[in-house]
Length: 233
View 1: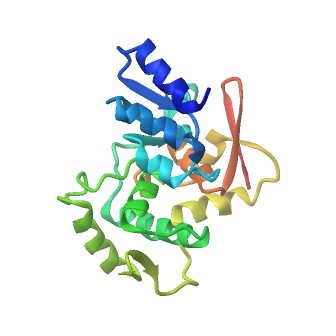
View 2: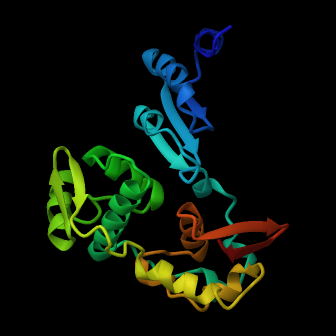
């Protein structure tokens, strides 16, 4: 029996279920996702943005998130002065930097940086991004300001970086990479958190910052019981 047939069978077997969650970024699941949407089910995709997740699959879903955003909260395990930040949020300047970084990453990975794809990838790279919270009425309005603040234009239905040699790594991640150069082995989160000003990029918690750094391939993360570690990739 095909995946779609299995999906339809589940729909009729459990008609009360309103939401379908797919834990995969494999584009082969698009027909299955489409069958659930056809029958009015809300669809979520939980994927690894750093592992060739299908853009078409992600676009099709009602909601898409990177799996790292649902990792068990570890903030209570450490001294709050290391993990908890002030009630800060992503600023416009941070968002413009994220915009430039996203376009650069997509070009580097030979992905077409169309308007919709860039918005989607920005949200996957940093789930704090929300143009409305930044005071914009629409994504288009945000893009106009973002283009003016960066060396990026919109040509032939996609974004173009006019200086392809421009460094796209945000300063906050450069800071983390520089700190980790002093360590040749796995290091506890809290030992790094006090050395990196992660609050400056709008992160309330060091965990979220670390997970976003892993999404980009800058670091690797592992845990042993309640202890979480990182190492430069």
